Length: 142
Length: 142
DNA sequence: TTGTCTGCAAAATATTTGCAGGGAA
DNA sequence: TTCCCTGCAAATATTTTGCAGACAA
Image (cartoon, rainbow over all chains, first blue to last red; front, side):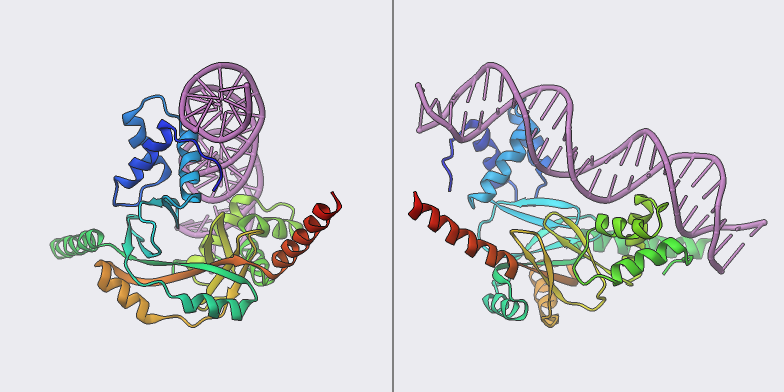
């Protein structure tokens, strides 16, 4: 890890990520930090998010639509809702043997993997059910 | 699948993706198609890539740095090189049971997953070795 | 004829960078 | 004092969208 200075801004960014259990975007964090200190710029938030991720103090999660951040530091997987984009942790064990299999199959030197599940979150499941039932009423009414 | 018209442009985009075994970006395809027909616009290429992916004629692969496209249509995983960004297929079997595990653990209705391995491709492994040995020479020389 | 598709240009996003001054160590 | 870090603004990079005309069916 490179020489890092412990700045007020970096501290705020770290606290903002650690304070959330959803998986915020860089901009979510910017807004949060911004509410605490009006003078912090977007560039600083982006820079610090990446520095913190590089140092392993937070984790960067790549999902369709962009990058999210995670206060958890242990290896785990994620599920993303294909309706609303919500991201949740999926506490499955890390499968070391997959890395070996992939290395054997590709010739790459494999250091890690990420598993991203896609599906529909409980909230959207409910909305879809309600919507379907509304449409049912309309169809019968019309 | 929605009503689709079989346009010249769409055909060119499809052929461009199918003609490559690396995993091109949207812009790679644009350049390729462009070489065959000077009048095709970027917007058309982007639109068609997404339509083709939606229809399942090609696959969209999300990796750090953006979206890539894949001529393969079957479920499989990918490895991305963290040095040069090259993407390769990792022919591992699809693990259905993971989806069930994730659904149980999260309450999401899980429809699929994607596994992305990270590592270093054979070419970059070699470059790094050569570079290391060069530095060794310099160090000894200096 | 109908309605999808296209090219163009502008717009919308998302993220990064140059730079001069500021502040942690 | 050193040099990493910051805010600002401009620059990038990537993808999307409005629109009028083109063309497949």
